[in-house]
Amino acid sequence: MNPSAQVQAAKARITAAAVRSGRSAEEIELLVVSKTIAVERLLELVDVGVVAFGENRVQELEEKRIALQRLRPNAVVRWELIGALQSNKVRRAVVAADRISSVDRLDVLERIAGATRGGSKEMHVAIQVNVDEDPAKSGFNAAALLAAIPAIGSVVAAGGVVIDGLFTVGRVVSSPEEARATFSALRSLAADVRPAAASAGYAIGPLLSMGMSGDYEVAIEEGATQVRLGSAIFGGRG
Image 1 (cartoon, rainbow, N blue to C red):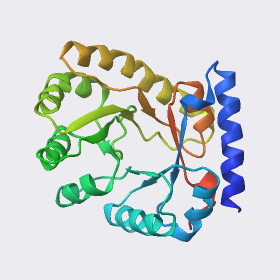
Image 2: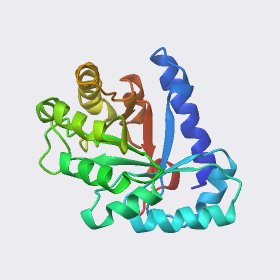
Image 3: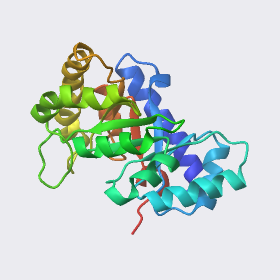
Image 4: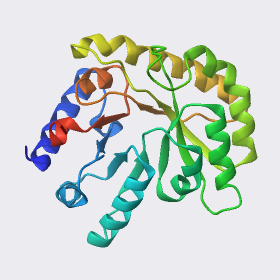
């Protein structure tokens, strides 16, 4: 599999899905999930215009960010942590990542904010939502997120974090269409939590990170502003 060719193919499919849903492809970011992929393989993606990578582990993100900066010093690349964040890695994540998208509990948000305060960097985060209430997945369910709006607001008011939007990991399904209900539910929840947050005095941004290699076109049709592609770019990882 040629990753740069796969990126171009994915961008074409992103554009087609955007057109079908009456949107512009410019509204949708491609986040390449680069976990376990050697940094040398990422260089060709940077050279064809990939600007955002997602990693599951803080240490791997740190190492790749440093290596890519050394190999392509003029490239402007964003790095997101999309895996679970351990409490002993919070400070390192705040330094290494441009966004932490796996904020699945209030105490995680509090630790991130605490690690950021007093420094020069506000940490951009996304709230992870377990839309399907899947016991195998992390994240707020819809009711818990709505109930947490005031507490989240207290953390935001104290400074250190900016909430860019919502993030979900969908169910494993046998066909992309089966994932539509998950993505529709996240879009609907966002329409509820954003005004609730505004009433509490803070903003939850427009990010809707949903859709992966097997179902990203459906996610776009349901309002995704970011899709996360790994196997669609690199093939299976064994």
